[in-house]
Each structure stands twice: as C-alpha cells, then as structure tokens.
Amino acid sequence: MSTPKKVLMLPGDGIGPEVMRQVQRVMDWMTKKRGVNFDVTEGLIGGASIDAHNNPLTDETLAMAMEADAVLLGAVGGPKWDNLPFDIKPERGLLKIRKEMGLFANLRPALVFDALVGASTLKEEVVKGLDIMILRELTGGIYFGQPRGIEERDGVRVGFNTLIYSEPEVERIARVAFDMAMKRNKRLCSVDKANVLESTVLWREVVERVAKDFPEVEVSHMYVDNAAMQLVRNPKQFDVMVTTNMFGDILSDCAAMLTGSLGMLPSASLGAADANGKRRALYEPVHGSAPDIAGQDIANPLATLLSFAMMLRYSFDMGDDATMIETAVQNVLKGGLRTGDIMQPGMARVSTSVMGESVISELNKIA
Ligand code: NAD
Image (cartoon, rainbow, N blue to C red; front, top):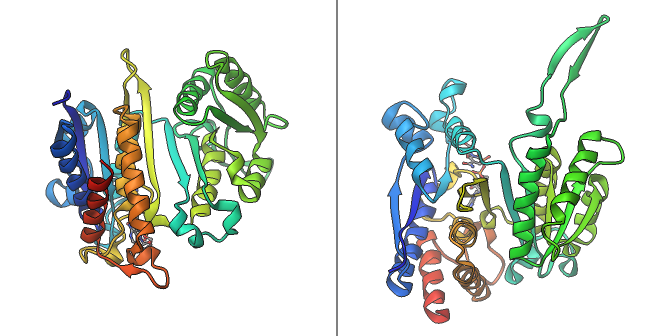
C-alpha cells in the first residue's frame, strides 16, 4: 500500500451526500484494485452542521480540514436554513473554510465531453474537444480592496471600490498557473486590462517575471474584453488562462457555460505551498445542493467524481488515475447513459447510483 492520503469528506446538504457516496465507491475501488491508501474522515458543514451544532462550520471540522491533504465538499444550503441570520447560514461555512484555508487560486476547467457536445448553445465545431482551464485569483483584487463604500461627496452620492494587487499576490497565483500549464499543454494566457488599469500593468510585469522560471511554457497576454470575445468565438485557442478575481468571476462562468451542463462541472481551490510544495486544497462541484431533487437518487454525480479526479491530479500527483476516471466518465456517456439534467433524446435515463456503478464498470474495463 502507498502512503496514506488524508482526505476530509464534507458531503453537506441536499444532493451533497448522494453524489459523495459515488465518490466513496470509486475510492473503495481504487483501494481494492490499485492499492491506493486513502485515510478518509467525514465531517459536517452547512445546514447539516447547523442542525447538529448550531454552527455551519465548527472549529473541530476546520481543524480536520487544516490537517487533511485535501478536502472534498458536496454542496451546502437549502430552504430549511434560508431564514436564519446571515452569520449562521450554511453558506457562511463554505466562505469560512475557503478563507481559513487561504485558498487564493480557483481552478475551473471547461471540458466538453464528445457525447454532450449538443448540450452547448454554441456550434458543435466551436466546442467539440474543448478542454481549457480558467484560473481565478480568489482572495484579492477589487472584491476585497480598501477603501470601498458609498458616501456623499459635494452633495452627490458616490459608490467606490479599489482594485489593488501586490506583487506577492500576483506572483503566487502566477506560479500556480505556470505549474498548471506544465501539467497540461504548456500554454498560458494571462488576462488583464493593462491598457487602462495600473494594477494590471503590475500584474503583467509580474507574470512576465515568473515566466522566466518556466521557459517551456509559451505565455501570451490578452485584454479582458478581447478574452471574453475570443472565449465565445474560438475557445479552443486557449489552454490555461489566469486572471484577476473579478475578470475570473465573469470569464469562468462564461467558459463553464460553453459546456452547457451544470451537473458536469468540477472545481478546485488551492492555497499556498508549504516547504514540501504541498498546497491546502478543496475540491467541489460547481453546482449547489439542488434541494428540488435531493433524496431522490436522481442527481448527476459526475461533477463531484470529476472534482475527485482533480484532487488526484493536483493534490496527489496521480494524473494517470485522474485521466482514467475522466475516460470512464467519457465512456459511460458514450454508452448513452444520462441523468435527468443531461438527458437527450434516445438516451437511457439512470439514477445517481446506477451512474456511479457504471463509472466503476468502465474503470474495471480500462484498468
Ligand atoms: P443549484 O446548483 O443547487 O441548482 C440549480 C438547478 O440545477 C436545479 O434545478 C437543480 O436541480 C439542478 N442541478 C444542480 N446540480 C445538479 C446535479 N448534480 N444533478 C442534476 N441537477 C442538478 O443552485 P440553486 O438552486 O441556485 O441553489 C440551491 C441551494 O444551493 C441554495 O441554498 C444555494 O445557496 C446553494 N448553493 C450552494 C453552492 C455550493 O455549495 N457551492 C453553490 C450554489 C448554490
């Protein structure tokens, strides 16, 4: 058996526990068939934690997250907790864990599976084979910059925010981006607005400087308005894109929707590297807790399974195993199985658990 990989599973609310069960099955399969040693603990977050402890994220759970090599989260929230005060709502648990773990880099892949190419609103030839990664800076920029507010100046009300980035903030996200490019196709596009905003003039300078440490990576720079246009016109020209918090917020949603299916989208958020190069990391599907379909065994578990594949690739350097899971998902879809959210004419509608079982059958064929 390999060295233990400490994973904290936080299923959360709604469909979270159902989709997470399918990941647990894949982990069991990997332990049995490939000798991977997962040391799994489970904790509560969101509404489930409020029900048990009147707190969306307890200090004990947070300590478990800090101890873990990686955290996998389902989803939080639901109507049961909608009327609670803001600071004990389920979503506060999620914001707190991201902040306390120092997760400054948000990775959102936009990947179009051949079998689902029809789900995109764009033409097949534009999105077929699409596989890009958007890296968004998550803890700085205009969403956090001071001063900010609304006040009266010379008898007129004004609203204002501050777009500010320090060199170290840009450097650490740039390094994650270059590492990512090295693990993919060695192409990186940094998106800024350096023709207008000084903060992104600095951004561009720092990215250029970090680039010197990664001579194999081909770097380009693009203004954000052009990047938005290019993402819709010809998204396949990109491999890894890195950008600021606000630009990334907008571009990652745009890129995600090129794929057309919320139940298929994984994500990862990474923190600073320690002396051994290990980063704190949290993986989660992009979708929420889907209370409208919770408890019915009909949710799509693939976004969570693909988030787990990202965990293998980025936290445990198990890129081949990650690819194996992605291929298994690809094959299941090719075989015509669909959960309700990605249903297409002529395909077979299956439950959450049958989808999980089918991924395992495919893994048995590939491994
Ligand atoms: P949602 O993503 O939960 O659901 C939107 C729609 O997509 C629903 O119709 C749902 O049934 C469907 N859907 C989502 N995931 C699916 C899946 N895996 N399989 C099949 N269908 C799926 O967003 P929402 O309805 O706006 O929010 C519901 C709750 O989730 C709210 O309490 C919200 O705050 C919370 N939320 C949590 C997160 C998170 O935990 N990261 C993210 C977004 C929303």
